[in-house]
Length: 195
Image (cartoon, rainbow, N blue to C red; front, top):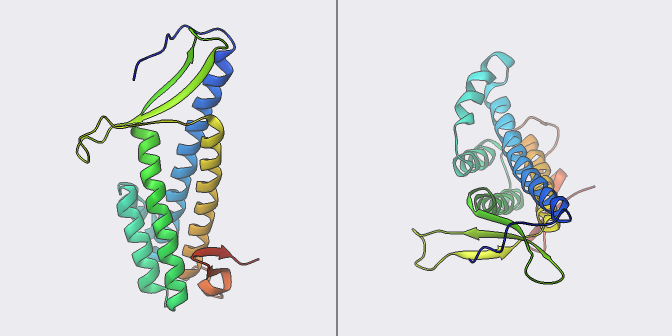
């Protein structure tokens, strides 16, 4: 990618700052989802305050993929889930896995947040370049990702985190009065939260 001239006028600063804010918000929402998963598992496995701290410590070093596998496996193994409830868990897990891939791109990619000054009108750019040399022989992928898109992704990962936490709350028996099917329905190849 050819780098456009970096010297930009003052109109660029709000764009740059908004893009940086949106990147940070996305990373925070992603982290929050995994914090909720760790908390639910630690609570379920410990069943008391004095033993949850060591479990939180052990879970704290897990990668996102490891935690995802442990969380959903535990939900399925202790949750006494029927076939439809298992579909809910598999659908949520697949969404979390896709979100891990997106987060890896956002967090580990090269961001070019610039303003092109040699064209009129000046153009603000927020481009993500992701290289994965172990997975492909090409020059990687470049995508323009404006702050609005990052904010949309943050909203999506926030909602996914709420759904995953709700699933864990019920499947892990923390909310022992309800079943997963009381909270979620698998319909038209997607999970819908009941009102």
